[in-house]
Image 1: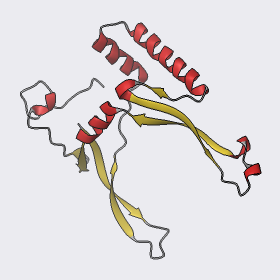
Image 2: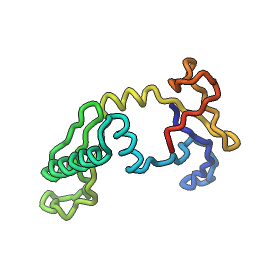
Image 3: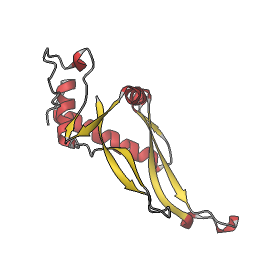
Image 4: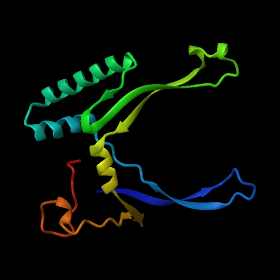
Length: 155
């Protein structure tokens, strides 16, 4: 699989002469709706869609409960979720309290499965609005014999 990217022009406004530079940046990817994901997991596991949804909802409820107590939640090779904060620095220790918290957030740290996936992920560039992605020599696991076959995840 590949991340589809394009070349973008950027102007460095913070420099006096405002030079132009070029970077490669990902094209906004299509999102998979939650309902579509439920359908795919249901088909993959052979259990009903309602059971998958109930399981996911229960997982999210329990994760929320544990993180509400400040605990990190580890989901095996998927990764872990940890609640954390960003706070304003103060000159005096007595000025540091809950009011100095700027933002509360949840940090996701990928587990082995996603780290491995990222190390194997390739980059494909866009040219004339057409992706120039090359499939692996083995056909990319599409199951077909046609070299020009496009993988359709069912969207």
